[in-house]
Length: 66
Image (cartoon, rainbow, N blue to C red; front, side, top):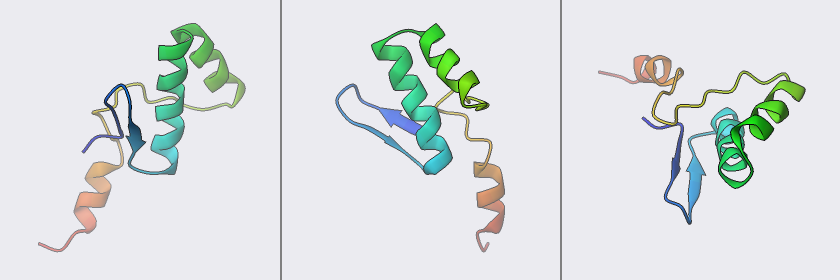
């Protein structure tokens, strides 16, 4: 499960927290990595930079019935 998907023209996330990570990734693309990291640090946000690594997916999957 991806936290966010960026096709270049359309960007979408899997939720609110993932949306914050997604927006920081957009900032890094439009401006640069340092600017995005500065914004994350100012917001005291632990930025998950890997769109394909959702730390919450395992928990969500465990809630699904077998």
